[in-house]
Amino acid sequence: MLTNLYDRYGNSLRQLVKFGAVGGSGVLVNMVITVIMNKLNGGSINAQNVLWSIPGTTFNVRFTALVWIVAFFIANLYNFQLNRWWTFRSSKHAGWWQEFWPFLAVGSVAAAVGLVIKISLTNPTSPLYLPDPHFHESAGINSREYWAQLIAIMITMPINFIVNKLWTFRAVRTHRLQPPTDEELAALTDEELGRA
Figure 1 (cartoon, rainbow, N blue to C red):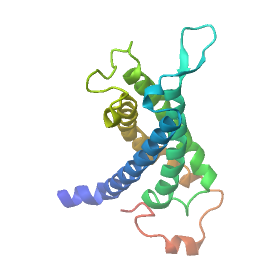
Figure 2: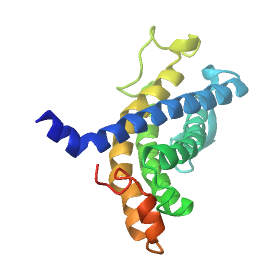
Figure 3: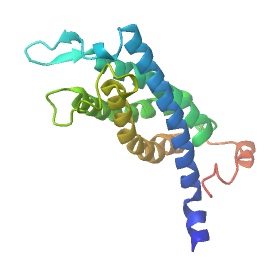
């Protein structure tokens, strides 16, 4: 029974582990960008600085939102390239841009959800605000800014995997511009052909 389960889901399990490893290294990339941007802005204590007010509302765009967006785009590009090359091995099946746009679209939806989570965790008026004394901006590693970034990433990562596996890297392969040649088909492994 276990052999049948492994035969049926082994490839997906391997992909999940690889996706998680890529995602874990992407989290490091994201957090490094977060730390660098906050350091350049005078530390995480300034993360709530208002960049601009949204006209006609009482809402503001804060530095923490800019950090989330910039770190997301850099980590997204990093994750895409590694997932394309290693996790899903799709570079032989479709063009870079054909897979990047769906990956970016999926990531952008997850990033929007993550931004709402991060703002909820760092906004003092939110019921999800990370409480003092455990989290505060002058606490270094216990910085609310950094923990909110990490928590938002962890919540959105599983959704990212499922949608990217089922849509981005699978759908694009089935819409190739040209069918594979006999030589290309002969060079593909069983795993790449989806038989695993």
